[in-house]
Image 1 (spheres, rainbow, N blue to C red):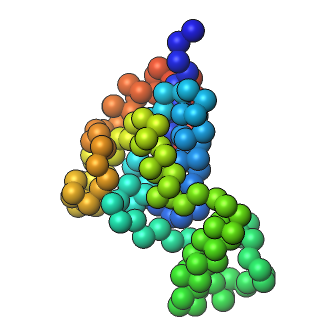
Image 2 (image 1 turned 90 degrees about the vertical axis):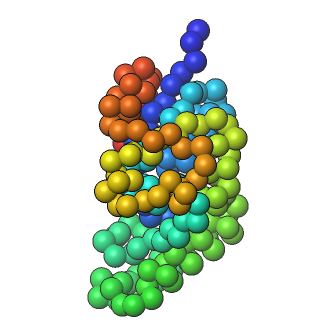
Length: 155
């Protein structure tokens, strides 16, 4: 039986959207899947060497907050930082791995990471700003990966 394959397109660069592709990738790798993540657009924020990922309560009505917050309060300066701190504390308190820990686990598990070269160029990223071990390629490369994948996810 051949090894199962998972292909993920990761497009979001916020703290809350960094978790799903990394959790799914590391879980699949632990289940002996061959895993590839194609990081594009804002998802490239996650593969920066020094990511500064935040979470925004604005436009996120499902976000559980200790106190219900009207939209007007969510737009005030400092709310994004406060929401980010609260979420990180909650995750740490529940024993959830950090993004850095998950990224290390993914790399140690041979999860292939592809950075979208078009997006790198679009946002003027330098390869030195991004983690080591990335492959730089375009959408055509993702199709090569996806056509052989058993599961393809868009996150």
